[in-house]
Image (cartoon, rainbow, N blue to C red; front, side, top):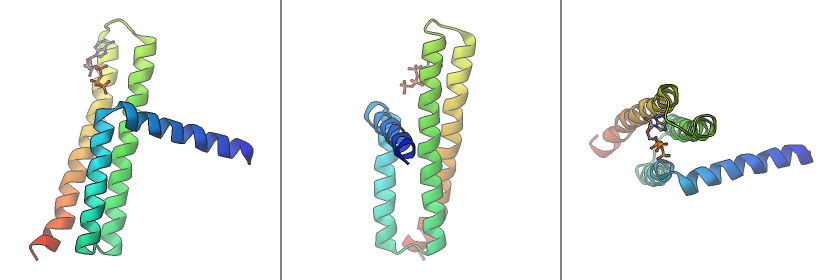
Length: 116
Ligand SMILES: Nc1ncnc2c1ncn2[C@@H]1O[C@H](COP(=O)(O)OP(=O)(O)OP(=O)(O)O)[C@@H](O)[C@H]1O
């Protein structure tokens, strides 16, 4: 049980560090707060909340994995290397794909509430 709590605490430390140090993560968190407030205002349905929460979690999780990859690349290759660039750019691309999908899904969910 204590080991489980300790691993939760490490995970929360990672989330906190991601929010404190990564500007993109701060943008994702701010966007999530605004979207959730808007969701309360327009009374999203249960299924709409499920979709919105999945997308928020996916984007923020991808951002944290991207940050982890950046850290590992900086550790393994502090000097410039084409593979280090490829790893960082590929990880950033994964976040971008999810962020674009989140915006499109957000439009599908919110537009009918705003202009029925
Ligand atoms: N070791 C490296 N070798 C070659 N290119 C690199 C290397 N490190 C970073 N780059 C290139 O520079 C870009 C910016 O790198 P940086 O480490 O600042 O990451 P970032 O994507 O800007 O993330 P953050 O600003 O959150 O740290 C990378 O996306 C990559 O294209």
